[in-house]
Amino acid sequence: MKLSKDAKDVQTPDGTYSADDQTITWPIDFSAKGEQTFKFSYQQPKSYVPVILRIAAGTVVAGLLVLGIIAALAARDRKKAAAPSGHPPLPPQG
Image (cartoon, rainbow, N blue to C red; front, side, top):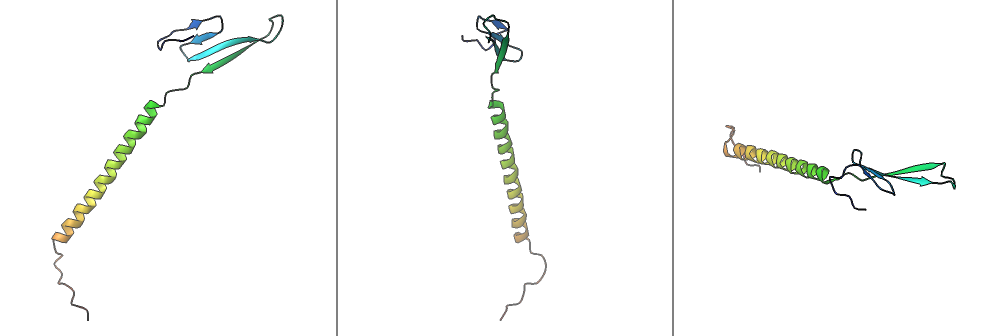
């Protein structure tokens, strides 16, 4: 039996679908007289799409942060190289 995505609680001859906790429950009879029953529930797995999107967004943000730090360090090094410190150059070794 196929259920639509917006299905509410459904009672079938084989079991019950609960929309609140998204479980399907089947009664199973173990005795010949029907005195004992056992309920088995199956819960549909949660979707991992939101988790994957959060991980991807976090990776992009972390990558941009690392690129920003690298760019800031490179700009600082260029600024140091362009402006001499005021100290005289070292004499040639030899």
